[in-house]
Length: 130
Image (cartoon, rainbow, N blue to C red; front, side, top):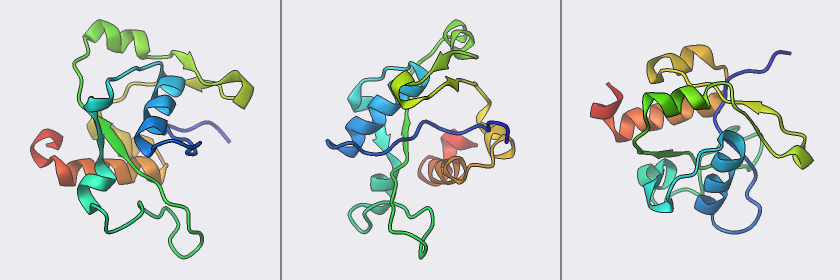
């Protein structure tokens, strides 16, 4: 099956969820952001009511957290990201970065993580998402 568009993701390997998110973003896209720019949308939406969101509730107990960040990036930097090959070789990752418009990402990706992230973002930041 052909590769599909997704968002950076990974298994928490000890440490805080936020630290793991920053590491996965760096490994899978080459993007480094300051920790204070990272927003845990799952915590912001649910607080401590839930451990995370359940991608397959009833089928497994796995949870995940979804994040966003706000940072300034130039058109040149976006162009430099497009097509970049990233990933951790020892984990057999070969990830090609694609930059897509926010309004197109749900249509372009069958990944439920993407769909959940877009819905959370639109719920938490309705003016920015419209």
